[in-house]
Length: 190
Image 1 (cartoon, helix red, strand yellow):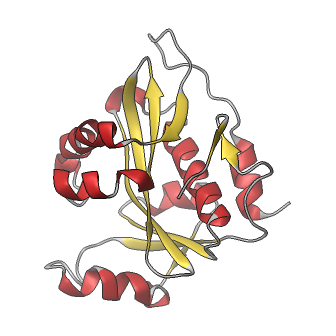
Image 2 (cartoon, one colour):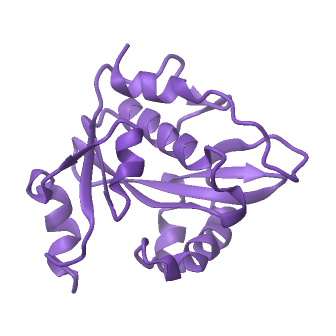
């Protein structure tokens, strides 16, 4: 079994969050989710681990997001951002404070791994202040120079370039998507 497939298969079911009545579900975001995604990102900017995103940017890229929904409320989100034909990036991985420590972030990353493999990407990367979290999900810490697509797309114009303190992490995507190419009963759509 491949690393990406094994990673996805590891967490097939997470119990409902404490104090909630319904099961947690993952689904592709819809345009109607843009405001709630934007608000979730904005609420967590002060933690210092996210880059700001405008509502217009989130709205334009809603189709790239996977959201975690519990009791009708979005409690987590993650964006699969293509950097090149072969490399995609995990962006805006956010889980609400109330939903943390329940495996929601890992499930969101698993969904992005599966989507990236299904879309034919060869590598999935992230830039993070918490590399240990991604390492436990199967990523490896790599030099920033190994991801020139990210440097040319975003880092070169960033005021914090070369002093941001973020680590680059990478996951090779071998063997394609998990069997069925879906999560939570929902097929992937680019």
